[in-house]
Length: 127
Image 1 (cartoon, rainbow, N blue to C red):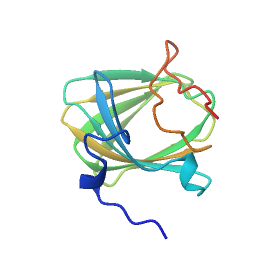
Image 2 (image 1 turned 180 degrees about the horizontal axis):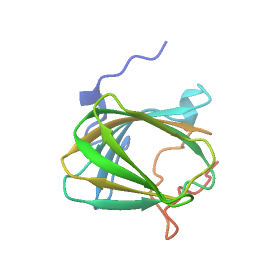
Image 3 (image 1 turned 180 degrees about the vertical axis):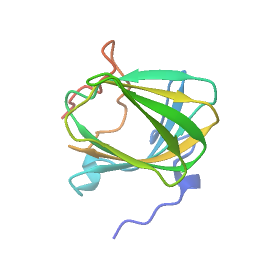
């Protein structure tokens, strides 16, 4: 059994930061669950372009407000607490945070831990 608190992750190697976000990683590949689970903060007033070419991601917003722009079809979606979206087709997208957003994210395959977005907005597939 694995039991962790958010406080267990902050300022450790399980917290990865970038200019527009901070990701606290509850479960990683080494935990053997087959997926990774993250508590991610998207900073207010930021814009993040992403294109997860190596991973599928599901995101559940539990705090804040923003918009998701799907670049594959030019649709925009309002994202507020209680909204889930899943990148089932590796869609390239832009997330704009009007307010600080707190997101619970699941990745498959699981992230190893230190991944950050590359120049294409993707996480590399680490082993």
